[in-house]
Length: 184
Image (cartoon, rainbow, N blue to C red; front, side):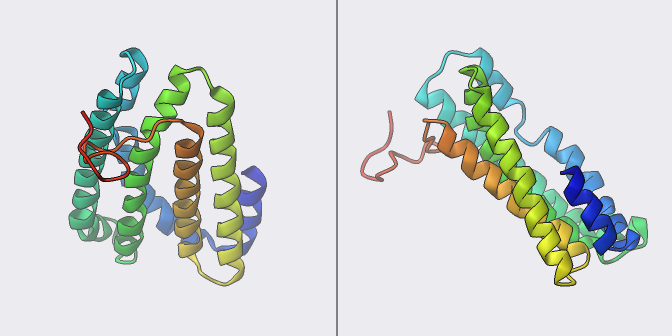
């Protein structure tokens, strides 16, 4: 990640980094509380399908609320910083909160099962994808969007890796994966 940041520093302007940093102020705070603490609770409570489903539904509902607040508050934050371009950057970055909430549940289950190699693998994949996508878009003159889309793709990769590594397939209480009957 350090190498990718060094390359990006040569390809992008300080203004590009600054615009994304404005948006990341809110996203970083929201990411800390994005799953409402339910992932940490899963680590301490006995494992059950019903509990995992409820945790995912709660994390997604809370993150969805944060995304909604970010969409509504983006113009206010952009006006506060005096940079109207921040509004769209913030809105796109906020969608990654849903991916983070989705990934938090399988990541918590992996930590509970002490499968740290898999969580490290997901984090390394996230860093690699973020760097490659950001550098590619920076070379294509995408400006601050190179950092935004790189971050977004990295989060999506991490979510995918964590979900695949965990053997749990939560349903959000919406029924079995095959859709034929409700899960009890």
